[in-house]
Image 1 (cartoon, helix red, strand yellow):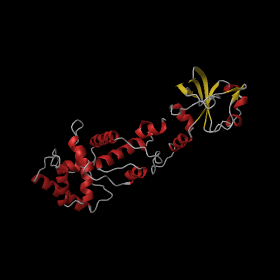
Image 2 (tube, helix red, strand yellow; image 1 turned 180 degrees about the vertical axis):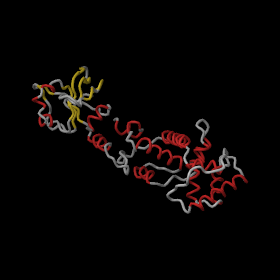
Image 3 (tube, helix red, strand yellow; image 1 turned 135 degrees about the vertical axis):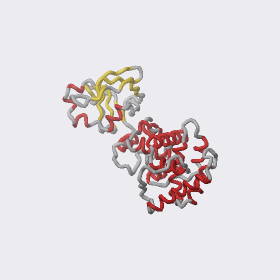
Image 4 (cartoon, helix red, strand yellow; image 1 turned 60 degrees about the vertical axis):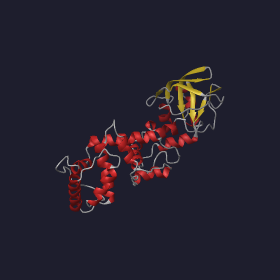
Length: 304
């Protein structure tokens, strides 16, 4: 089914194996899942100056045409293209050689990985194609907007420390958190310090000063960094004016977790929190739901 899905998505391209001429796919046809006959009906392809109208049949090996007894079924007489991975027996209908497209084995292996259910590996893990800086930045922006919309607990904590609210609405639930009472006490201390010595959060070094203040309040380095990345940055983020915030994000060390490590193993260099946060949002929006066709890397990998 991977090949049928890929043909339907117009991911399969190539040359006609018998003539060596490029195949232009004008219309992939309509996927036939109910009636006897070719996998796709009413397909339109063009090879050189000849336009073909008819069915497209897809197999792993071309010899499956006979194994499936298509040669005895009149429904298959209108096939104009045979798509295969192995052309072990050239197809003829009424003694006429039928155009055949042989799928690149590398592309076929990538298509197979799209079906994996594991979230512990990436479909693209075996290649070194990376993301452009613009793509990572774009998903960093999307992450900030999403966190604002979700109003996560980290934003509430940042709002509390800045003195914009007087209470913490949600319970504190962090797996790495130490004693909850001590953590809550440190948050109150951080609020007191900020109200006594308020920072101009729009300044270029405001997050660095904030980090020092949070440490002095009793928060650990991990807690302070986590709160800045997931609370203060989304809270301060403004879609049309975020250059200073972006610049400060690049001064914060990258997140260290399982998701980031997946991309590091792939060969992507992740140096700061802006990049790691962008990568984590790419994973959330594209990798988990297998939206490879919407991904910069996926398009480069699949559409050849």
